[in-house]
Length: 335
Image 1 (spheres, rainbow, N blue to C red):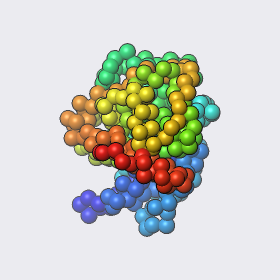
Image 2: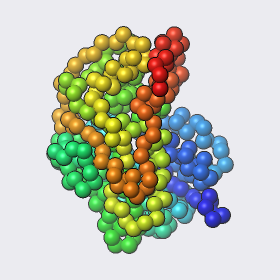
Image 3: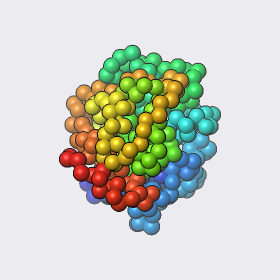
Image 4: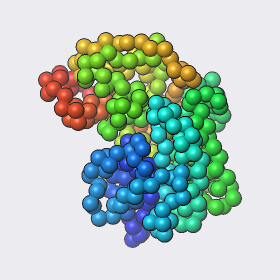
């Protein structure tokens, strides 16, 4: 609530991993929140803390389709577009829908923002940089994306969504913010979604072989979900001139094998590593340049990887009923 006005906020994709955390943050900040999700990859259980609370509404709908009247007849102050499957196995399962979610879905939501005069935040991705030839990746880097490969439905869809957003902004049709999100992890990751942290943690807890694609020397930069959400909210509320795209991610670069070793230590697991071929177009290195976020938003991540992994592992254990003995063994390392 600001200056006596309680904001009404739409979160598209609000039942997903990031979206559900964002809904909770916005509710805690005093906003009325409408969560719109088709539940293709989002889950109602992610909204367990919010369902039934005053000021929270869930609407099941697909942004690829025309938005339902229940949404279009409302007026919003802010619209966050987080609607799109984000893990490669899931977005490649229906590539046409993935591409249309980013193109048609973003257009539908931008039109709603224009009608409501709402500020609009588009969740873009570090994937628009492709397999980068510039390292770390600043927002000025145009990327190295295979536009016809198996990941293109997601990568090119997000690039097209950015184009739509900035065209709407240039034409004065909507005030937009675009965030490029790097690898994010934390509670509510889906064990089956194929992302590296959820894969490694769930396999370690189950005592299964841990799948490592390639030789494990490829790098990622892992940002804890609370830090990521704080960056998104700060960017949405940034009141300066159009900042262009802004990277929000953790610049602490780790190899996949370093991640595996840390998870094994934290869980006390005796899982072995099983190497598999590197998927097509899988980026070799990934690390954000966050100078713009630091300068404009006063933002930088504050959660050390080990601390964030502890919380993530504890959530997986609680959800799956993993043995308490393993949990105790896994949480002895110092923060």
